Image (cartoon, rainbow, N blue to C red; front, side, top):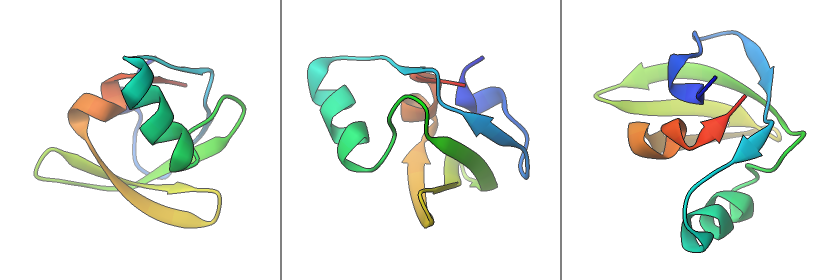
Length: 69
């Protein structure tokens, strides 16, 4: 399922990251790679704040739709 549909507090494992090569590269640089554990901390104004690799990162809902967990 796309990350956008996950509930805050649940831990998930990233299965794949979609989008253009530029989007994949950007997300990879932020730590969004297959096999990484991710959880949603909060949702604010259409953006998600997520925990990934001991960091908190804010991503847009459009980016979250490209991350399959």
